[in-house]
Length: 124
Image (cartoon, rainbow, N blue to C red; front, side, top):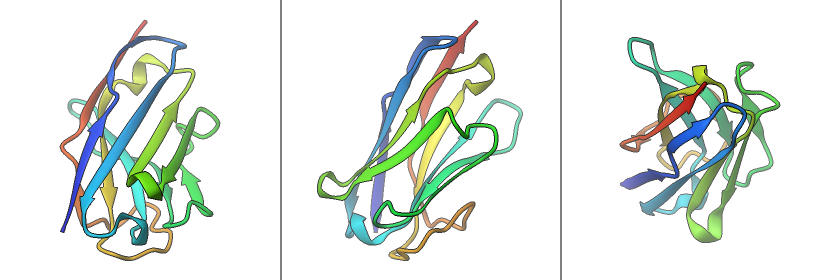
């Protein structure tokens, strides 16, 4: 079992930056591929970025490519999402997700564990 807790969300002006964290507990974090998703009110959940167990393979949705960076620190059991040049349309609840011990890059999924989410609001 893996428990995931997101943090770092908040209110930021357009053009600003935030760094989200996803801290894992339970089973070995370093053996799991992980990802970030988001969901805005009235919209479907959207894939943002994914990373394999070592961080050597990363992928991004076109909507965030060049603005967001996914990374992980296995020693700290934490994954990050650095978000730059934020736009009002980036406002959503952001979720992290992990596979059940599958280390290879998983892209859009499937994922077995999800956090509770952290709210990001970008004002214009």
